[in-house]
Amino acid sequence: MSVDPTRNVVVFQLGPDGDSAIAEAPTIADDCVRQAWDAVRRARSTEARDVTAIYSEWEPSASDQRFLAETFPSARLTYSFNRPDEAGWPAAFDAARHAMEDAMHARTVEHTVEQTRSEGELLPILWSPTDMLEALPHRTLVPGHLHLALAWVAPTPHGTIGMDHLTHHTRQQLGDPELDDLVDLAMENLRDGLHIDGEESRLGILLSLHRQGSIAAGAVALGDFHQQMSRHVDDDRLLVGLPCQELVLVTAAGSALASHVLETVANSPHAEGELAPTALLLDADGLRPATG
Image 1: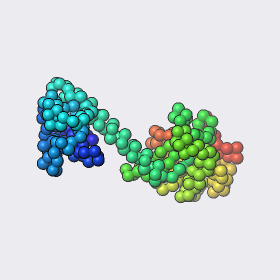
Image 2 (image 1 turned 120 degrees about the vertical axis):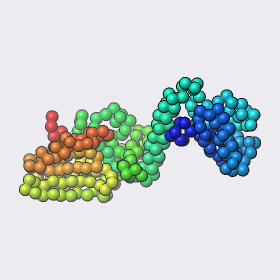
Image 3 (image 1 turned 135 degrees about the horizontal axis):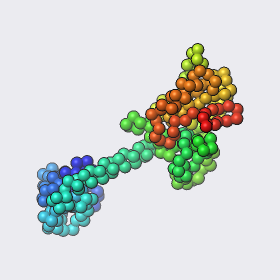
């Protein structure tokens, strides 16, 4: 679909096998469809009798409707936008432009979902409280603060990270596998490719967990996360910063680096999305909010 509503796209279906010819012409022209048909005939050898259906983005004018009835008496006509009177064109073009942009965005999202499902890997996704969780199989990690769900994750052609979330409906389509089994699979996927970088200074030890071009925040739900992180920072009480889904910061709760982690979370630009920037305390008793 064209994103310029002043140019009307007309599609002529040729025969029963789905072959089609496409042309465009000025939308406001009374003979817009006729112009499009003339362009098709110049571009390829086809006859009016070959046309079985016609789609026009805009409703044809009265003149074009007569042309269609005379030239393609058996062809089915469909269109998307009503033709306004002469004074209504500016408003009609504006509304159509928004509709076209929304349709293109929807197709881009659909393509991304298809791509992530076919090419992505199932990973744990952290969520802050939201009504959307009602649609997702999930576990509660910190009551009232943090939840874990699943999604197929893959990089998109635009350089972003695409996620196709596992819903109750999707789970049914998969044959209702046990959530525990799916979580175990996602956790194993997460371990593969998880990088831990350590930075030691006079202020203490700061760990950064990430996966190249993917999601890492779900690492806080790994069964041995506390044991491994405590060993690295040599402290049982940990401060865990989650500024976004892609990064986990860990330091000893009592170290001088704790304020740096809290500031990183507080100043995170990733306030939108499934996970709000979050700081947690972690010890042998489990996870809890770092404040409040």
